[in-house]
Length: 167
Image 1 (tube, helix red, strand yellow):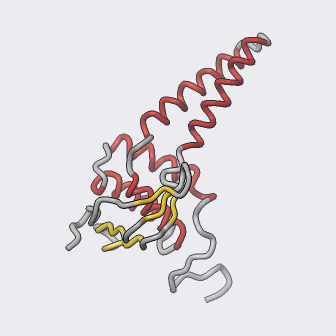
Image 2: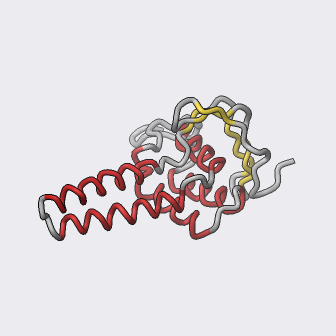
């Protein structure tokens, strides 16, 4: 029996690379609006995709150091601020919401829901399923709303979807 708003199991994954995991067994989330959502076993995910924050921090810090060597003034200071902010964001988000992130990656991959609804499920899975604080879940949600359009599937696999011009 799956409780509404909860995951059915503790996650069993294997790391396939430094940043990618594969589920070793099916993962089910009891969404209050869409019912049970089942991520199949052996699904590959890159989790929350927040390593971009770490890379921005790294290159902004390098830019700030170079900027002070070459006396760029305000630009070096701005790059330092960017480095500190992205490092803080990375530190606040790293290690949270693994099950919710895998569910969200699966929803984006199969295209069974519209993108905005996938992101709403992600927020609910973070807060009720993984127990992530609402303020932290809001940062995750904002991140997928701003940057998720590049990852959302262009060819949904669920019947009932069609492209413009066909029915």
